[in-house]
Image (cartoon, rainbow, N blue to C red; front, side):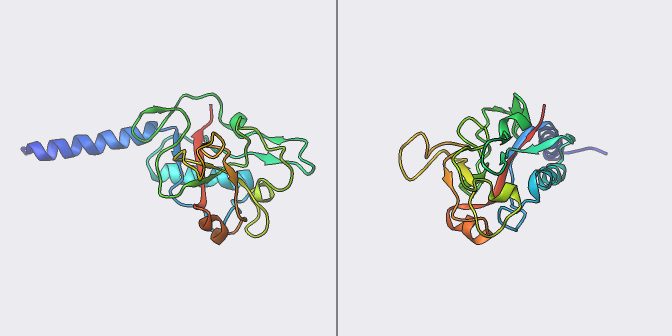
Length: 187
């Protein structure tokens, strides 16, 4: 059987895209879980990352959501940056990235983190009840596209721009989000 030039290119491109996705170590979720910021805690958020990564062809099994948590009183918690390691991370195109993520249609990405990637000590609920609430509360979000209402470092932060309007799906959508998270392969 003789293959045409177009068929060979198509096979090569399909193989290349699959290989790139298999080696990706970072992405922004394309969809939220559908229940606002109630991701089922860190365990549920990690499972969401793993399921989406597998669907995209990733062979990695140690996907972690870039999310911080806090304990009551705000004295301690889990740092998002400690959950993912030091990288380097590769996007679906195989390009090493700095952690800013891939472009998606939604602007706000849930993190619950301060600008250094640590749990927030700002006080109040900054993680929608450690990612278990879909009603009252708030979560710190970052801007994947590095744009904000003002031209300030804080408003342009990829991981700590502002608090959400609430934890419900509707409240997250109202400020430019959809319950999306950054997912990294932990190392």
